[in-house]
Image (cartoon, rainbow, N blue to C red; front, side, top):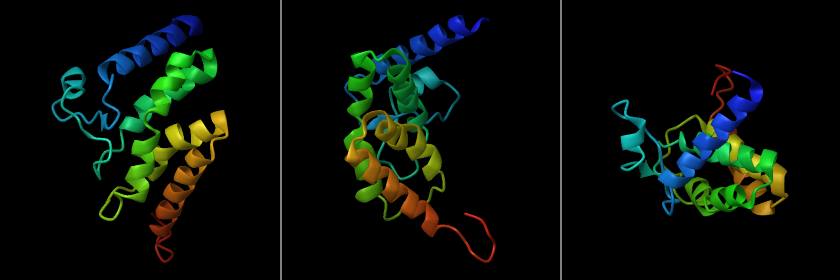
Length: 142
């Protein structure tokens, strides 16, 4: 497969996610039984304390916007801004996940780099602060 065909396949997959998640900006894909398509219709809320996978889906939207500059991709991913903010600022008190880099790098950091929007920056910095708190100095691990 050539690179152009692979790129077009990625854009098509992003558009499929946009359709599956149309209007559901607080929901995201955790797969329990291996059937990803089915799980997209009964997902855990993005704000759920253990959901970290949605950032890969929204991250694809950021990359699609970055490479095409098509407004439809930007408009779709920007609708997740409040969910990412709320997850780290308001729903974090019992969050056991250590995957904050996976959650906030493909979305909040990428959106800040793309737009310069200070709200995305503050969200990413808060996630980095929370992740840093999990570093164990004695064991040198998160």
